[in-house]
Length: 311
Image (cartoon, rainbow, N blue to C red; front, side, top):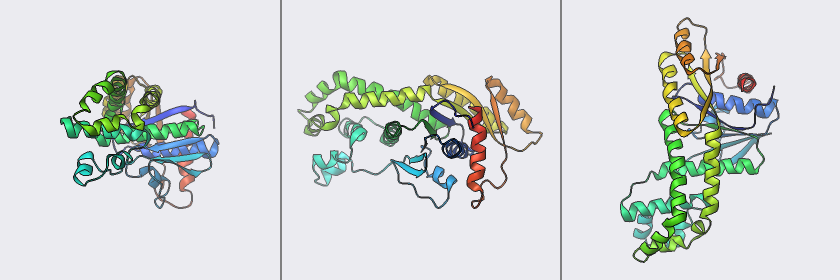
């Protein structure tokens, strides 16, 4: 198997078309047959990557887990935290509150306090997921992993990820240049904010901003594949997904049509996909792929080899 160009690969498309299967198959093929260091990050939720490999597999969340030689698996999952409002109501200390948010997660209390004190709504759950993705990609790079595969959420989730990524960078840059001074002034009225601004996150905000920008750059430069099945609706929705990726500044490299059965009606979907003017990789149906037991991993790897050889 020829090694694809190292970097970040993202499988994108609507739900239920086999993005997770394709992502997992590619990761297994690269790590087992090619012996190339690989990480797969489950950003789609629900531990679907682990279940695709083995339904009994339990993978620790929010860290890269060494699953087998040359293969690491990361699962992005939000964890609960006590808000500033609940901390104050419960008589907790500010230090205890901030201790919930180490490293990159130090951006969360800022958003939490802005919401609490000024009524500015923030999608903290989406922010937390993105910061976890930043953390896992950084871990992969520090481990010298060459191939990083991200199994993203369906269409709307992908749009949230890409939109939030650039918005977070803008917010952090504003915080660096003028926001800290303004918040210091506000901190005379809100001591909690003043306490936060003296903490470790603000002291290192320039470093965190650079690391987040590096992740955004990697997302822009990633190898995007449009995944669908040969049916009219999934094929047509790839145009919406493509628009989202191109609007972010990314580039789609190919369409992957999963689960081809050789049926006559599939031709119409393939014709629609031809409108992208992109290479189309057709993956034939693999009988028994979801029947776990002897041969399951081998079938996934063989599917992954088809994908890897086309990259």
